[in-house]
Length: 222
Image (cartoon, rainbow, N blue to C red; front, side, top):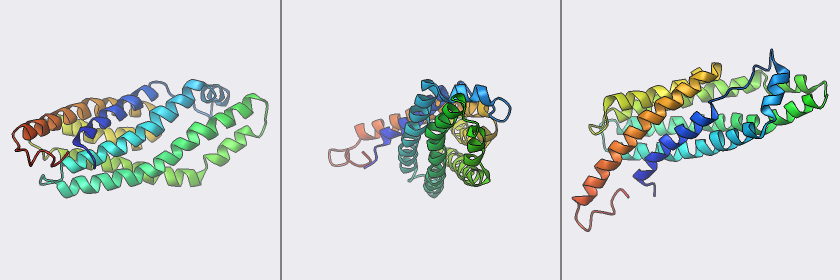
């Protein structure tokens, strides 16, 4: 059963994403050589495996934990819809992370090794079909996190500014970040700050409720 303590996985996701997005890859359309050097570093690989793929797993668990914590509020259904929307969007995002972590280094290494077709291979991988998957799924992710922020605002224990910060992080990390890498960094900061306050506020409320509960009630919600 999901524990409400897992809400803390949201700021953990934000921290990993923040670290992973402190640097941004050169534009392969205009700086393919520099891009190839960037994507073939061990730092790039680790940042995607840990800061993107593993972090997204933490996000999913954190989203479900928060949605569960908000289920008894007047926006419980919104929280449930937010969790579903976020996770459905995240499945497509994870596919993009897989391409970035494993295909891009291979393409970059091929180019640095003198393979003339490497540039064409890059264009084949990141074609219209890839974009057709990336845009809708990233949009779903953005909407899902925004809805989660809206649902969180229904909790009297959470400061409104923290709910807004949480909600805004979705579009910045998602749809805006798809076009501008620095937007992901901004979104990560928003989620790190807002998510930490949300987790702290709801965790302290849960702890107080357990202290006041009888022996037969303390297992509920854990």
